[in-house]
Length: 139
Image (cartoon, rainbow, N blue to C red; front, side):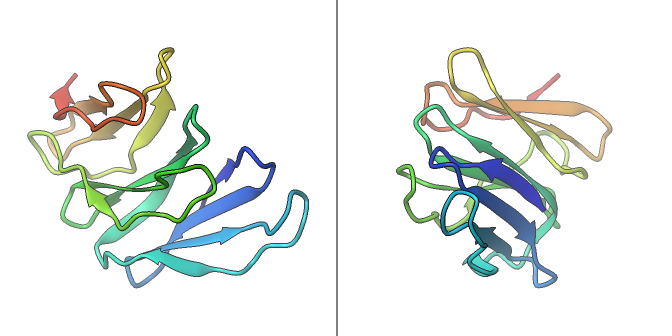
């Protein structure tokens, strides 16, 4: 699983279940017990370990690659809110074969990196905080 520390001090864990869907287990209060695993996005195509991040506005986003080689995003539209259905971000010139990496740029936008089957690395980022992601660029 991947873990993030939410702005309210709770820990959220994300994992891909054997069924290919995204599951979440989070604390009910900071330092408290965990609520138990629950499916938050049904894809059937997710694989590997999620890369998760807390954006400057307090929302959580998690990214994973799929069996078909795309990157999928599941995130909150508001801090502490429900998670969206999975959103496909596609792939670069080659299907992705490894877990994506995620980081924040100095301007607070989310930046993604992934490795394609062609062994090249690709990057996609938000044009603005909370905005849509650019097309994948081969590095």
